[in-house]
Amino acid sequence: MTRHFNFCAGPAALPQAVLERARDELLDYQGRGLSVMEMSHRSPEFTAIAEQAEADLRELLAIPDDYRVLFLQGGASMQFAMLPYNLLGRGGTPNYLYTGIWGKKAISEAQHLAGAHVAASSEGNGLTAVPRPEEIQLSSDAAYLHYTANETIGGLEFDYIPEVNAPLVCDMSSSILSGPLDVSKFGVLYAGAQKNIGPAGLTLVIVRDDLLERARPETPTMFNYKVMAENGSMFNTPATYAWYLAGLVFQWLKQDIGGLAAMNAINDRKAAKLYAAIDASDFYSNPIAPHNRSRMNVPFVLADDALNAPFLAEADAAGLLNLKGHRSVGGMRASLYNAVPEAGVDALIDFMTDFEHRRG
Ligand code: PMP
Image (cartoon, rainbow, N blue to C red; front, side, top):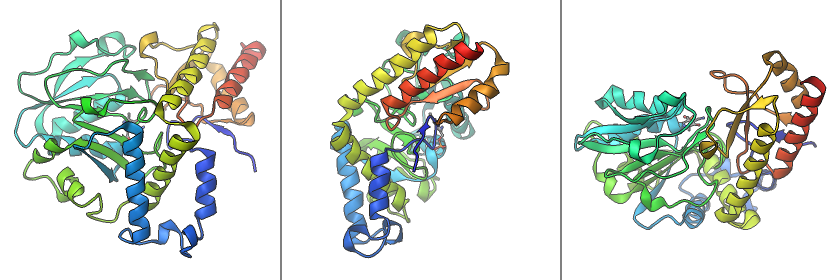
């Protein structure tokens, strides 16, 4: 069996230790004679799995007691729509920071429902730097401010948490759990699972209790945070197996990595090495302002587009998978999520250096 290094932006690499444990427990979960996939979500076994996953996540992120943790479906894209339904029951204008493709999609969902005010934008600098705090201009009736902590396609990451006079909402799909986080600064945090949490199919929402009272009356039941919170995310059948795997990832973060401060240090090192290699070369380049360079998603272009196809083919043959940039921007992108080991980044840098010498 060979496991290659997987730089996919999502669904992304999972820790090998997690996959091994899932394999060992697949056919017979802890002597019960069935797999987690085949259990009732209301069984004592699954209830224990679900509760343990939440407890471990709460510990990792030090989530305060007045926040609910929801394990939903529909992806981060469904949150783009759920948010305005849940937070606009008292009127007001949804406010957004625009820093890239995902933020734009979030804005467009709010516009369908209620119109949206763009409180600051990176359009002027070609999406290469996030707005500075003093550039953020909320509308006078802001119901919330939404931003995308890390734009997965552009490779643009906030280097600060905005401080505003409205509930702060953050799409943290591609950076959650990459390091410690002060959850108390947020009203709502959400993330699709398929990067740093677990497999696709699960969506994590962390919401402050007082915001559960703000849903618009026409909010569909399945969209309603309060309904989901009151039912322990089991108003209907949840994504049980993805929830279980997320729980294994949380345990890996706690036990194998040693928590989010340790994860943070590893992620700092991985990203710093790769950006240093890109900057040291005239052949590779990355356009993002250094203080906003994403630690999780590193886009880069080659000096000659004609070399893209050979680069990707040779990388793949060398066991370095999924380096193709998003179809909307082209070039390359190396996603360095938690489960991508430092050895994978070292192997990528060696390959890039060698490719440049041979073909650059
Ligand atoms: N937001 C961000 C920052 C993302 O990276 C993605 C997916 N790549 C999404 C939202 C959409 O997520 P999903 O596919 O789970 O709907």
